[in-house]
Length: 170
Image 1 (cartoon, rainbow, N blue to C red):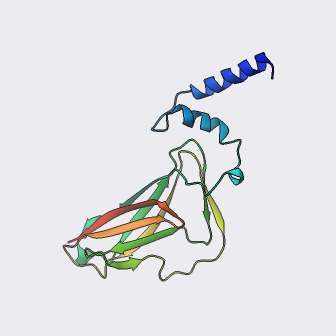
Image 2: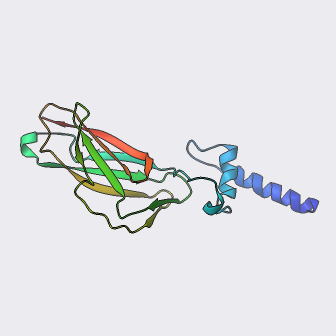
Image 3: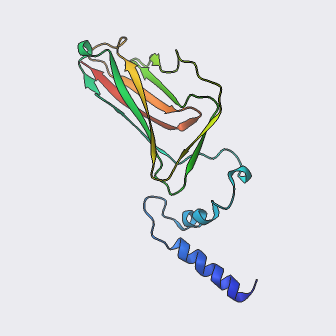
C-alpha cells in the first residue's frame, strides 16, 4: 500500500469515527464497528447475535374496576434505537409470549396456551428508529380486587427482549 493510499484510508476512518453520534453508544470502538459491521456478514460471526432493541409495555388501563372489565388490552412494543437494522429469526408463526402472575407468583394466564402456531420459520427486520408493536388481551376472570398482578411479555426466542407491567384491579 502506498503512503498516499494509507493516509487517505486513515483520514476516511477518522472522519467517519468523528461524526456526531447520539446516545450511550458513543465510543471510538462503536464508531469503528459501525464501519466494519456492514462489511462482515452475520454468517461469519461467532455465536448468535443479540439484538439491540428497547422493549416496553403499556396497558389501556393499569388500574380498573374489576366488575366493569372482562379483559384488559396490553401492548408490547419493541423499538430499534440503533443506526443498524435488527434481524429477528422465528421458528414458528408465534412472535410474542405473554403471561400473567397473581400476587402469590402463580401463573394464571399464558397467552399461547390455547393457540396453534404454524411451523413456518420467518424473519422480522426492525429498521433503525422503527418499532414493532404487538397487542394482546388479558382476561380478568381469575383476578381479585385489591391484588397486584404482574404481566410479562417478550419475543419468542429472545429472552433479553422482554418487559413487564402491573395491573391493579379494584
